[in-house]
Image (cartoon, rainbow, N blue to C red; front, side):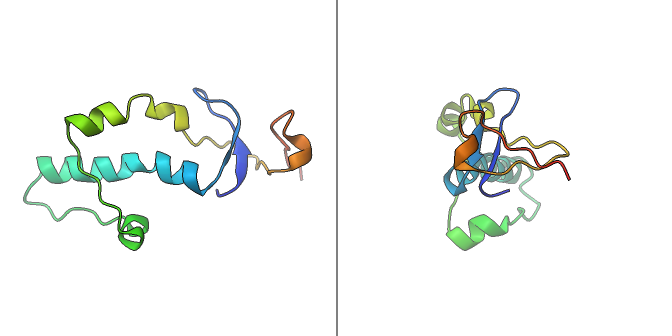
Length: 98
């Protein structure tokens, strides 16, 4: 949902740009590595966006500290779409009602 404007339960209304989506998706990488460490006989899941970007995540004590308040970056959408429109940034949302 690139460039969608929305807000979550724990976070303010914001535009979900590439940087925010990438930052929030770190949890996927940490989760994959945590499972790899726990289930050593399994082939780890390969998340294609990380394969493409070359990003690698290692679950550790430092990673656990680094994800403090990760929920503040939650990506939340309801059944309606939200569009980014500079004229609506004061209210934050421009709801489509078709």
